[in-house]
Image (tube, rainbow, N blue to C red; front, side, top):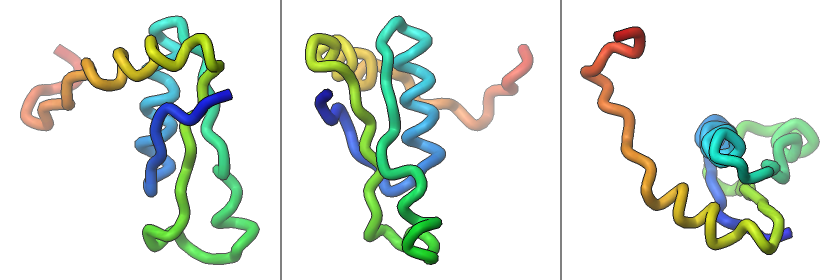
Length: 78
């Protein structure tokens, strides 16, 4: 497996994992439970690693780089 991105925010890591999986790339977030084990909130010191299979790495990078940011002014249920 290969790290495609890393995040200090678990929510963002999970959103991008779901984006990859919606596009046919199996992905996993590593270190999800580290803040529970350490007994502290994430203060930017922890890293959540978004991992993909080696053969999916380039496709995953392309998907993540081409995503469009969510426009918060646009209603979700249009």
